[in-house]
Length: 191
Length: 191
DNA sequence: TATTTTATTGATTGACGAGTCAATCAAAAT
DNA sequence: ATTTTGATTGACTCGTCAATCAATAAAATA
Image (cartoon, rainbow over all chains, first blue to last red; front, side, top):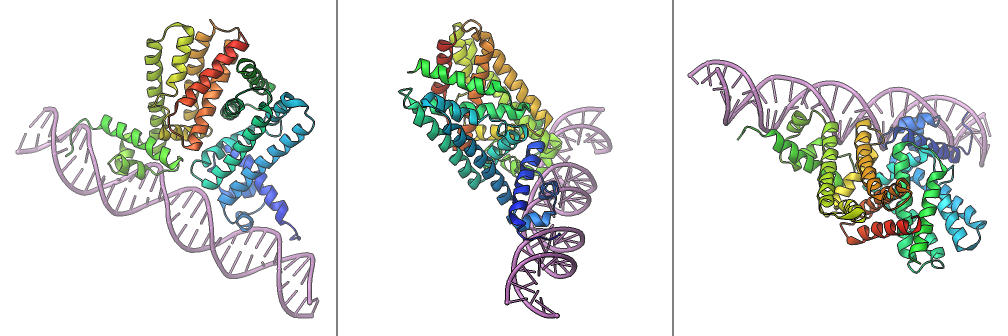
């Protein structure tokens, strides 16, 4: 069985297993053994490839972040005009592959982790900055207070995620509509 | 030294110590011994009064919830008109004694806890339902879609909390203004 | 005064889990 | 054919921590 070039496959399997395990348990307190078993290997191998639990979890965070970034890129690519681009950025947050039970649940756990782990906090900062930057860029053409609106929309998205994670809800269009309606209300009121 | 009637004092001290310890650590993974020491007693005594760590943490959640409820009550008492009452409810969330570094940080940890602990989840439901109920009640007079606006404001408050917890920011008026401005924008746009 | 109740501690137990390590096996390289 | 390298496991270590349990002391009660 021992073939060559297993590392990338095993790392990927572990990252996915970690997200699923954490998402289902609703907690970071899942054992490396549980994650490894779900990924079809021994706990020792998980340590061999990642060096430790922390680095495995950070890799899982980075993965979610990378998938999300890809969705944003794709969405922006076929969007026209400032408002269309804003919609694309917001919708990317609620794509089916992103706004999914286990992912949002895992994401909330990662948020908690970011409070006590500086590396996790740094990753979260990257996510927030990127989102903010994307929003502000297109808001400039639509409002005199782009920073304030971006702050609100960002916080609102986080809040929707948090509630989705707690209620165990999966993807549903209402979330997207809710945020988009708020955006329009903000643009209409504070133009 | 052993006086009578220590139970309520010790329970209260433990609850406060738990909030501070969790808030400072940014994690629920603080030991009972740490909490007990901060509260000025041995770990054994903490177990004696609370029976276990879980019940102690739940008591801490209930305490935060109770303080918050009190603020809402006080605020509503001296508020006039639907809009004034809405402002009061929202401002209660950002009172100095509520929207404080350690409290928001602990609150985020409790949110995470609610994903894996049904009792904690139940407490969170109570908080969300109360807030929603308060908002909807006064929104009826101001908009045709009170439920939707209440949902948005609720999620926005959660998001602001989450970001405050992560950034380690303490109380500042911008948070309140942000939510209030959004409320007005929503009322103006979707009347 | 004797007894019961409450307060309190420190030591101990027992479980659990992250990380390490030596040993094994198979493919690749020489 | 021999050696080297990567893959893989299971057992073992070590630390941590929640929970338990006498044992003690001081009030309150009888």
